[in-house]
Length: 351
Image 1 (cartoon, rainbow, N blue to C red):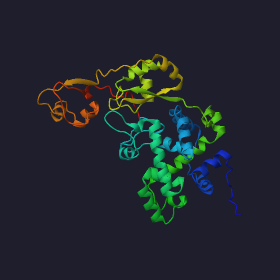
Image 2 (tube, helix red, strand yellow):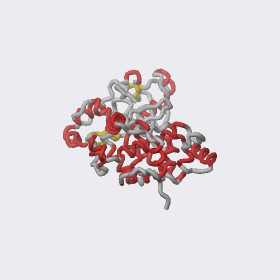
Image 3 (cartoon, rainbow, N blue to C red):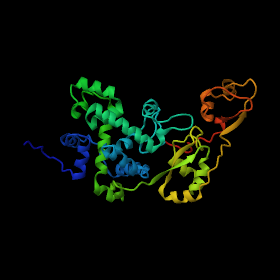
């Protein structure tokens, strides 16, 4: 058996992390020896810990979702690399949410994106979508490290790189001289690995008073409640004894401060400790003042003419009123979205 000189000693959790990605441990040794892993000094550790803290309320849920789907829990750090666990993150390329999904990809994966809601910013539903996508990429590539690369640069781009390189070996694909893959993708995997190794180190977590992050069986800290359409976020916040801004932070997927009218009810996230109070104190209230105006249909009106009058499109009026046809009746009441009067649910957002 050949030996590798100056082989670093990895503890069990670190070795487990490396194996989770299907990466040969010898390659990690090479990266460390050549200082090509992102070093984690004291300042960078504090920075990474702060990023991790951004998602502390839903990370236990996401970890369990990954585990139940047979995806390495280390893929949490793919989300961390993408968005720093900020559900409101929005890139210049229009990718959004903690998994930074593009609009077209998100819709293909079943997420809703419309005038009122963007489920890419729903930490739970976006994770369900990301899991579908990662499972597809793993099935297509056969290795988790290849799935991570494809998540960043696209499966087509990865396949072209493999064809050009004549190999799917990680060391070949990440060769700095040949540059089979874009620089962003080459750095991407190293970044994810560096984060994963840093957070697998129990000693560092204890030193930073973040040992609770090791608890993979942590109980869920967020709960889901179903709230009827038309309720304002202000009313929901009052019922949960939360500030409006706090409720917004848990529910970034709502673009405006009310529950959309397109469905009878929607899921709203609350901190677990607020559930009992909410059940005892929440009072359902249909309040769309400031969000919609009521229009009474007149003789000669059509959806098209009403839409033009309010600078909307027909679909927006149809969705707000759950209309299945374009036929209108005189004196029929329509809810007209008053977009200019909306309080958009982006207060103090920073990606």
